[in-house]
Image 1: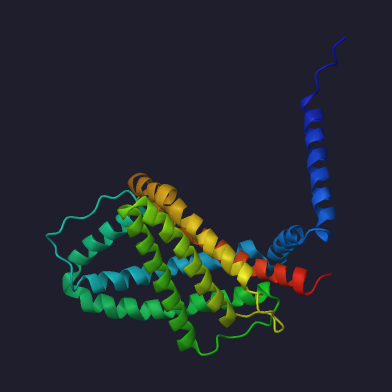
Image 2 (image 1 turned 30 degrees about the horizontal axis):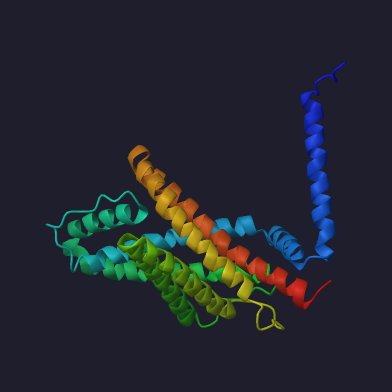
Length: 288
């Protein structure tokens, strides 16, 4: 006689047991493999520090930063915009955003000075709050005392320089990919390395352990460099289409929701890179 078929409850129980057995094997192997230990420590540090909640707060600050930045950009474009130039219909975040900015700049040509002044002031203020949020979040991940931002002008300048460089690198990569797929591949690898180096430098200005080894911030920088390029590819092939569709179906609310999701992913990459550094230092430099 053939065995009776297993009930759905029995299959569910077996699947649960396999998941638990796999989990136990992974946990037991962390003492033998540093890579597994780093991965588990990263997840534990992220949960203990409230990484999801901090990423949401950081994403909201990043989203707010884009508003005065767009206003400031519109004001600058108001000095050079040619109202007779046709807009672009590229179905991507860059195409949609540039078409919107160019249209707004043409309409706000007479008030360009007001846009530059107001947008610049608001961008400086929101840049300070964004910098403060990054400092607090990083301090919590490294379990360091919370403190105010020292030398606010320098901190805001570094943040604005990093944001400008990141946007310029992304634009350069998109341009080279349109010119040639081979150049685009080289630009992707080159940009990932530059983003990693840039975040490595910025990480030294953020809170971290006092006895940090020389390599202590490299793992997170490598992770952020690779992660941002993967996000950039997802932006080109997924978020751009989502933004275009959202603007047609749901209007400004759909665009805002898509940009918030994009900002949240960037925030998770930033905070996870700090958690990876903490885990790597504790696993390799202070084992136990």
